[in-house]
Length: 196
Image 1 (cartoon, rainbow, N blue to C red):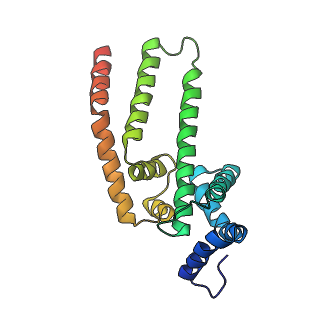
Image 2: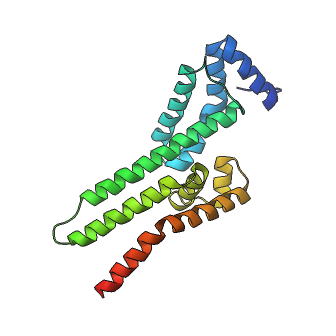
Image 3: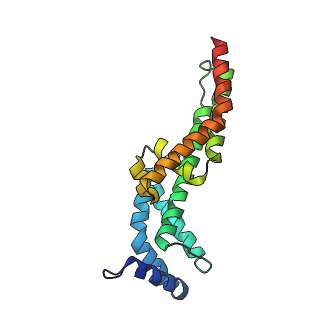
């Protein structure tokens, strides 16, 4: 934990020195300074305290395992937050796919025709493919906004970027999704019009 009179830059320098001289003190300082803030940031994304703690522990464990070869090009704080939030985003994406898969598997007999089931699966696959094709920051902003319901300001705080960057990334994500889904959406509209 930073000493009360220690600046953020001095703390970063102390961490860099400890990483190469005293591994236990290095990890203890990282843990004391960042465990709780990382947990709070991850919790805002995953909305589950236990999962947030697990994800933060995984990040710290990876730092421990790779401490000898770990090369931080920014700050330890930025590195840890980026790693933790990336883990949270991956977790939420896996959860969404798992929920979608479970929902798709539970189809009551006689309620949906085979054509409706196939169209739903194709739509889910098209959206999943379109989301996967987005650049990482666009995808992160889109998922935090649309799936997690965060405001642009909350997203900016979480990702440590300017709100205008969030707005630009969201616009880019929507534009790319429209382009990627254009053929699917026009085909689906034609199919729906053909039914009526």
